[in-house]
Picture: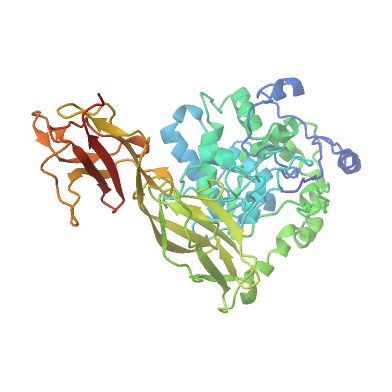
Length: 562
């Protein structure tokens, strides 16, 4: 996401005027929130909790810096399962809250020593994506549209070149943080987990993302009930002491109480995700400042402000971000993805090591059945094969043109023969997929030739000094395991096996004039020794392959010169 700069407010103002002045001063200076009492004692300690060189789950992408409101959800010691009342900020969308709690339960059974609290996931989810943009997820927990951070191109952000071929973030040049928990693709490749049991590991699914984030935070021997381990875990997510303070603030806020709200109705961050500018946030109202300087006891001094806050509370909802959510409820059918179809893909076959002559081509259509441009389509090579798209990639994401069509890159067959599939998937809310059968056939030798051109001669009753070396090739490339037949033939119009002249020997040492052999690596083969009988003359050795490639070799049996 674009860098977010929310207003900050320290607790403990003794009067409304003082609190308001503090808000103005801190908003202008962008001062960080005060560290949590349980966290590292100073900036150096907190920052030192994680080595600067370690990788971060988000690639240190920007995050929302909004802080919790002054009025905590509930006083200490009360239930965290409150009814649907109280501060709007304390409400967490139903599916998102369920995902956090499911992740906590899952880690409790697989890594009980970690003691992961779901409120920590909620705090990170808040600063990373505003709880999946206020809970805009479908029934399976997948975001209605991708949540992507900025390109990590080194211009104001870290430089992280593409690691997933754009499969998750749609960017084949640089990585971007993806999904409600903002994983970069390289981290997701290691920690991505199926959290909802659908057989997929999708960073855009809140159940998958929450469980993966939990596993990441619990890495090693961390015990998140210990403040130092919790700080290290959060800093490993984003190497920033300010990030740690912001997450800590929401963590304590959610621990004091929260409640479930319908999906899509959560409070969005007050900052503008497009420009990075701030807009007024109801959570920063100073109409109910506590009279004590202790952040842990605001409810104890509620009587004084009781006369002023009630009239101002009704004015807050109209200014909150959720009022901007209705538009997605009525999407334009002409701009909404509806279906995916084959746009003329031919038969996908190729010989090992060669490029496929056909390419997968698909067409995206909108809900009205018309071609839909600017639709992301992910092509993937699926199955036991070493066939790859150009650049050695097995997954590539491209965008359809104005006519709704997009063509996958050229496929190049590997050395492994056999069948596999190529899939094309488009759409996020209701994905559509097409599958295309493909196959690779093994190379078949089209040529067989000698490896040297030495003349082959022997005196009657002796053996030939030089052995015959051959190589079977396909378009110049040696073909291993090629079946070869070597036969001593007559020179008749219709050649047949000769009953005299040069011969091989079988295992028993008996003369044979036909052998079945197989080439080795690179298509090379050296024939066994050849022997001459007592009949002088010029003879022919014919070598053939199963594919019909043929080679003839001249053998001479003659007495040596006087």
